[in-house]
Image (tube, rainbow, N blue to C red):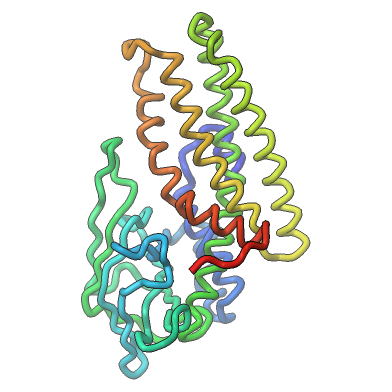
Amino acid sequence: MLEELARANAPQHIGVIGLGMAGPTIIAHGTEAQKSRYLPSILSAGEIWCQGFSEPGSGSDLASVRTRAELRGDTFVLNGQKVWSSYAQIADWCILLVQSDPGAARYQGLTFLLVDMHSPGIEVRPLRQITGDADFNEIFFTDTEVPKAQVLGGIGQGWAVAMTTLLHERATFGFSLTGALEAALGQLLRLAQDQPAQAARLTDAIGREWIQMQALKLTAHRALAQLAASGRPGPEGSIIKLAWSESNQRVTKLARELLPDPILDDGHWYYLQLRSRANSIEAGTSEILRNIIAERVLGLPRSR
């Protein structure tokens, strides 16, 4: 569904975090009560979700998150800050990775919580981007109380649960990203037909991007076959996200080169080029994705 929406140039689904990240993680690690409570509203988009993983100073190094969750009886008390959270300004729920045991070994002191965004002590601040939009947000937690029953996967098991989330994020987005790239290339080809003089010197570059898009589509189908066979996403999602982010930046740059006179651009490609700068940062930086691919595809030793 997400791929078809992207190919049709439809706006991003408002429930994309729930469908692609929260839902699959709850299916994999949730109790029957949690599945019954959250999955129907995720499917209907009756409740919107956001993600609370990255922090200032703990973006790519997810194991070093510092948002603290102190267990007091049957309640966790949260204090800390998250950043780059899409839809947080309208979200009802948040999938949140917190530090619940500062004395534990690396990767072992983390807990994954389902947090009601309407709880007291939560403040959301939108972040203005170079495009003028505010797609991302900061989230501040000040003595925010979360029931112990909202733990997903067990206390101290947050790293494993978060890895499930990220695998599904890249696998799910892989399909929508290839659809979006196919739509963008269709627009680029039509633009090239309208600007033959400029297009003549860019034919090879445009052709390379079209070939790249076809390879990404085949990789996405291979990822789907892997998911259907095993029930667990493979590393293909990381490959797709990495290749797409850099290809999309090149495609928007090519469009701008086809329109050297700003008067010819109605703002569409200018906006997309500015927005594309975030592609190689969001949903895993290109550097981190290259590490993942090296470890999981090439079998190289894990980086520390």
